[in-house]
Image 1 (tube, rainbow, N blue to C red):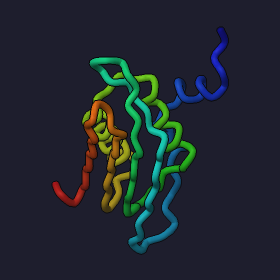
Image 2: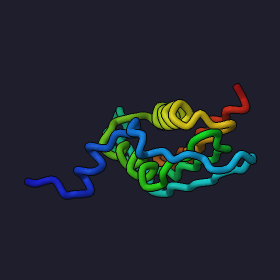
Image 3: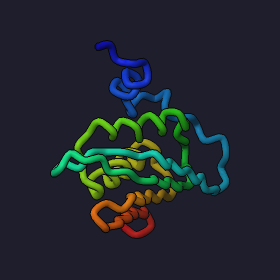
Length: 127
């Protein structure tokens, strides 16, 4: 069965390409606030899907992320078995390394499963 174009784009996506980032044209401090409500990854223990809303906030330095690239990067997790904690830490670490922002926060607000609601927050001002 042939892969659909969207699945192919997601599976082949590389966040490290320079085209995924644009120069920040502004020197002043401002906050970019992005919400991605359709995050999905598979539980590494059960294989069941985990769903979350990812919130990214950052004060850019020299670069900003292209929004379609961010969407596709987040979608790459749908094929992976990764825990809540590891997925949010990976998203934070990857984006922080690529953007080198003045400040950044990533929140993963996971839908309850088995009567457990998990929220993971990483804030660069706290380390």
